[in-house]
Structures are given as structure tokens and as C-alpha cells.
Amino acid sequence: MTASWADALADLRGGLSRPWLWIGLGWSDIRLRFRGSLLGSLWITINISLLVLCLTLIFAEPFGTHRALYAPYVAVGLVFWYFIQGTINDSCQVFAASADTIRNTRMPLSVHVLRLLCRNGVVLGHNLLVIPVVLFAFRIAPSPAAWTVLPAMLLLLVAIFWTSLLLGLLGARFRDIGQVVSNLLQLLFFVTPIFWPVDALGPGREWILALNPVFPFIDIIRAPLLGDAPASSSWPTALGLTLLAAVVAFIALAHLRRRVAYWL
Amino acid sequence: MAHLLIEGLNVEFPIYHASARSMRRFALGGALGRRLDLDHGRATIRALRDVDLELNDGDRLALIGPNGAGKTSLLRTIAGVYAPLGGTVFREGKVTPLLSIGMGMQPEATGRENILLLGMHLDIPPREMRPRIDEIVEWTELGAFIGAPLKTYSAGMVLRLAFAVSTSFRPEILLMDEWLGVADAAFQAKAYERMAGFVGGSSILILASHSPHLLESWCNRAVRLDGGRIVERGEVKDLLPKPEA
Image (cartoon, rainbow over all chains, first blue to last red):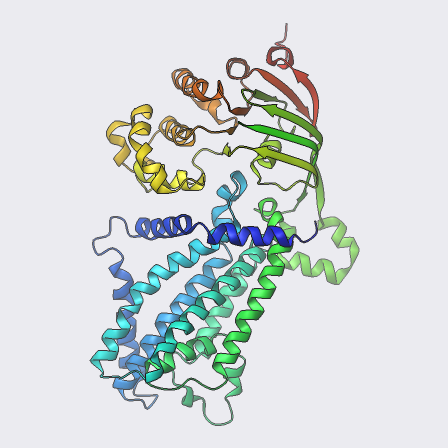
């Protein structure tokens, strides 16, 4: 079957024009996950708070960072890392998880990706609560450029959408993709400066960051919140990666959209 | 006003070996050349061949044919799930596919929540579905169960709920695959009554089933499929397999 650009466009438009559908489904996923639990979705916030606390107690000292600087650093990094990891990990199975729907009714494929984003966005929202608390507790004044966090978060959402769509399409065909991706993500967590500060790399080893596709996104969100400026390469790299993901994912959608129903 | 016109429809799909799906096979196939590729490569199935069909308001079509004849493939293609390899499917009117019981429903969610969830899967926003909930609860006779999780329902109760939701807005082109066959006689009669209300007017029904009784009472015309082709068209009773004498 040949590519159908019109189909791919219609799929995206059909998904984006039905926010009630993916918000409704994404929200119900979260509600059902915590149904019957006493604290409900508050567990998400408790979980990340504990992790920030533990990492700070253990790692602030060996990395030679004051706790008052380390805690906000690790909090912001972890909150967004969790969003990236959670979404990308699920994205390989995003169509397989809705196989019954895809095989039995007509629904734009982009809806499933937007639902995934919405579900993980709710988790992100719970985790975000930790950030102002930590910033205030340690008297961190965001820089005047702190507003750039908003476009940076938007860019992250867009990049994650395209990447999830691409991995979802590939994951529907190749079941190993999920394993490959979750392994890479685990590796990526340790090579990304989230629980260790950038200068811990030592001189001459910054190239380790240059190869990391997640670092620019973390950097453009984290630096302004902590009153710093992001690395000069971070915004251009994040924009470039987002564009690349969009182009590749759109081409993949045009070629593979019609086949997904057969693969599942 | 509903109209369905299918011309020269061909649907073909690839069959993947369980093993051919993994990247190892894919990579090895590439590295070791064609021979492996032939062993584990794609075989395609012609699911539908040269299907022509036209249906108008009030048509209730029975799809008859043995397992693997192409009934479900035809329904899925009409629903827009499978893309035709050749030919056209022209639909006038909203297609409501009822092809899998429980599609879009969540076992942990209550009946009331599942009404909205299934509605969303049928492209009906919750704000349009909500005013229909009372009518659906009444028709399904679920009573207090509507507030209980779906996992506590019997198969028949799930069926009632799915059918009521799918038909709460008069469907213009309603597709049903087999599953009504598992309903008991009382529910079939009740469902028929609900159906007759709208299909009598300006809707199209396409029903695939192996139950002669169901097909005869619900449908007013029939096609018999075999090997992906329509091999016979006519009255339901003429096309049903003759009982062994």
C-alpha cells in the first residue's frame, strides 16, 4: 500500500478536534487506576516527594552540592523525567492496548496517542505540585526568564506526541520495540543529569550530553526555574529534535496508518 | 436517509507468523537473504474479492456464509477499519459498528460510566449521551446494577447495555456481528422490538450470524459469502443452508 498523506492529515485533524474523547478516556484511565484507594491519585505526589527526599539525603553530599540547591534540582528533573519515561514506555504498546477498539470501530489513531499524553499529563500535574513547594522551601528565586518554562513545556509535549506516535506505529508491527525502548530509557536515566549535576561530568566530557536527546528538553525547563540560563545549544537542539520527530512520525503515519488494524 | 454503495471491493491482508513479527526474524531475513524470507515472510489473504453491494433505507441484510467466508471482514471494511485495496465503499449516514461485545467498556467502571465510555467509542460526546442514560437504564432493566462495576454483570447484562447504548441514537447504518446470537430468546425479542422502531424507517442493518432463526426474523434480504466473494443474493430463507433431510 502506498502512502496516504491526506489520510494521515485527516487522522491528526480527527484526533485533535475531539478533545472530549481523549480527555474523557485519559481521565477515566486515571480514575479507574486509583479507584478504591483511600488517598487515590495523591499517591502520585507522595511517591515523587519521597523520592526527591531520599535522593537529596543520599546524593547531595557526594556530589558536593548543598541540599538547598540539590533538592530543587533533582525535583524538577525527576518530575519531567517521569513524564518522558512514563509516556515513551507506554507508547510502544499504545495501539496494542486499544486493539479491540482499533479492530472494531473507526477512530483516528492519533486519539490513542493523545489519550496516552493526557493520562500521563494528569500524573505530571500531580507531580508538578512538588516543584513550587520545594522552590519555596529552599528560597530559590526563579530567573526573570522563568516564563520560558511554558513554551519549553509545550515543546516537550509536542515532541513527546510525535515520538509516541512513531513508536506506537513501530511497536504495533514489531513487538520487540517495547523491550528495546524500555532498556534504552533505563540507560538514559543514568546518563542524563537528573540526580547528578552537570559539572560532575568533569572537564572534556560534555560530549556525553551532546548525544542525549532528553537533556535539552530537561535543560530548557529546569534551568530557568532554578534561576539559571539553559546551555546555549539546548533550545536549538530541542527545536530540531522536535521537528525531526514530527517529520519522521508523519511520514510513518502516512505509510503505516492503514496497516495497524491488520497488525494487531 | 441512509445509503451504502460498494463497488468492486477488494480487501487483502498480510498474515504474520508469530515469529515473523519479531525483529530478530526481520533482521535475520535480511541478513540471510531470500530463502528465510520465503519461510517467514508475508503471506497475504484475499479477504474480499470483487464485492458489489447496494443497500437503501429499510434494507436489513443477512450475511450468510461459513467461517472464514469474509463476513467479519466485510463488516469491518464497511465500518472503516480495513482500508480497501481496490474498489470503493460509499457511505451515506453514520455507521454504528457493533462488532465486539464490550468494545470500549471497562470492567472496573460502573454501568453508568460505561454508557459514557462506549458512547465515546461510537463518537458520541458525553454531553450528548448523558440525557439518554435514564432511558438506557430503563430499557436494559439493570436497575441498581447500573451503579455497580461492569465486572459484576452477567454476559447477558453486558450485552443489553452495549446494545442499548449503540442504538440510543437512531443508527443509520448498523453493523452487527454474530454476538446477538448469544442472547436469550427474551432479549432477542426485546432487541428486535427496539430495532424495528428505527430500521423500519430510514436505516440500514447488516447482520452476520449463523442463527437461521435470528436471520429470518430480523432480515429482509440476504447475501451468501464464500471465499471472500458474494456467491448468492436473494431471500433469507432461500439462502440459508438447508437442514439435512
